[in-house]
Length: 420
Image (tube, rainbow, N blue to C red; front, side):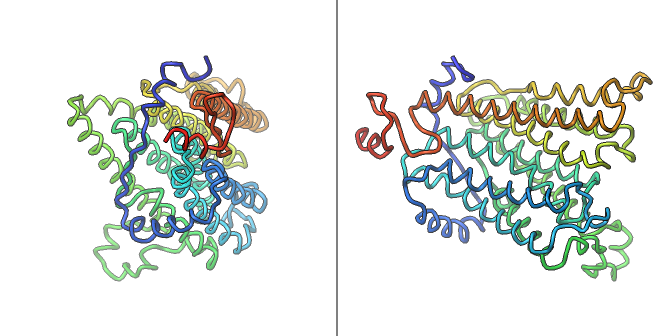
């Protein structure tokens, strides 16, 4: 027995992907483009290879950020920042990521490789991309080391968690009129493009003055003074609120239609705010205003560790969905965050200095160890799950091959023809 229990592996054969996409942009603009673009790919290229290629483009974008602004200072923090052309590469890389992420399922159907492994792999890459884009977007908006960046991380991860939670309880992936994978990504592509022309300082402009709403006294009276970047974050908050209502409405309808209690799934939303509270509590040491991690070069490694922990959390939810296992409300990866948060806040809790993070170098060591543990744990999870599913279903992950009845690896088309 590997990572996935045998009875859960047996449920893989019952799995079938179900999705609803109500996006008008997707239906009338992107889908025709995706249907054409997938035909450019040879059928000997595996769908998961396409997915991984898209993630590699985002990792390259992240690498350029680390090269040009390793301390994540942004211009307002004194950094020279990336050259403007870099933001154009971020826009192109993210658009290609979206495109490759959209056609991997089409390639799976073309090659006869569609199945639960593809959904697991797709969601895992999406989960990693989420935090990377938060960091890149915060850099493009000139937010840098700020609580706005933390708020952006929380809102973005919350949207992803909601979608995953909804899919677990309804059995289908629901993308509304405005969704993260479609309009959300296109908005960020546009943001990167604008930053490429104007520079990140553009987003510090006053929102009311830029939109000329400051000419109306009633607007000035009730709308606080915000930069364009702050307004972008507020807009994201409204999108999150809308998605919370929409996701629960879909879950409510699904549960009622099957005669199940519509309120029990709400309990499984709790793991996310609890995990967020731990991360924010850790970040708030020694105080919200003077956060040791947030106002140092440790901020990006901290966010990356957080993102990897989150990817592990939602990947386990998707695994539970495709194998029909109970919802994973606890994640062992939280232990590191709990230890880090409690240790950093010992002065608040019991008026004692931290045992581990009592100096900045020791804090840095603990944060980087947390990042390493998060990376290795998630990598181990991915390896074990991929190994279990490929062995059980007799399919390859990165090549278009399947096992025939004799147990030999052959082209997927040969096995598919024999089945027909």
